[in-house]
Image 1 (cartoon, rainbow, N blue to C red):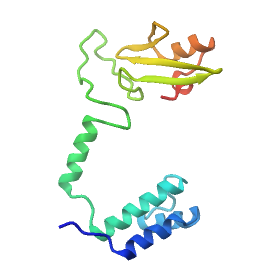
Image 2: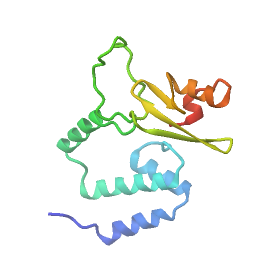
Image 3: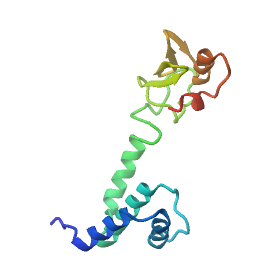
Image 4: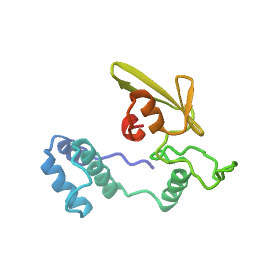
Amino acid sequence: MTQTPDNSLITTIMTLKAATLTELTAQYAELFGQASPCCNNKVFLWRKIAWRLQEIEYGGLSDETKTRIERFIDKYDPVNKKALRPDTPTDKNANRKRDSRLPIPGVIIRKEYKDQVIEVKVLEKGFEWQGQTYRTLSAVAKAVTGDHWNGYLFFKP
């Protein structure tokens, strides 16, 4: 049976939405037992607090659900953009793994630079810009700017 939130919980959550960052930080510390939260973003803190209040009121996720979520994270890691990549490389660079910071192959990375939109296509092994293939994002950044750049800092994918 689905439980519906009672008005007092909804009222508490909506009251917290208008709270100051200091008030949210204090509420976070009380609910999570940590002196300071992981960030100073009001919306993020409000959502974390609202989630925790609901978890306390109605219970959290079951162990089975947590296990299932962990399996999905292992397979489709959204944070590191890992989506069904093969676990075993099939070429001579077998020991070299793909950098987890990179988007999956086929993604277009866009960057505005000097009133120009730079579009770089992510390949399985490298990057394509203006019909040329480059081994690293840094090489693309150097081709674009003429100067050496850390590719991740320049493109921020």
